[in-house]
Length: 95
Image (tube, rainbow, N blue to C red):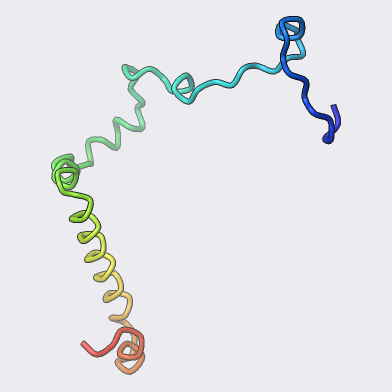
């Protein structure tokens, strides 16, 4: 088949031919069963404070976005902390 050729629709005659491509699989079929435990995931789970995750998920989307914005503002302040005062004021304004 050339690039400019159009594929022919499947008919009962050519649907079972060995040349027919495999039908597309859904994403769900590619995932392993839920009861399988990945040792890498299990190793990381012990270091995660799930209470913080649960607390964050109880917040509304607006609250989460405000929290994230506050975090990013703090990052910006830390980035400017090592700059000379005149450059810091030029970039971030007087504080």
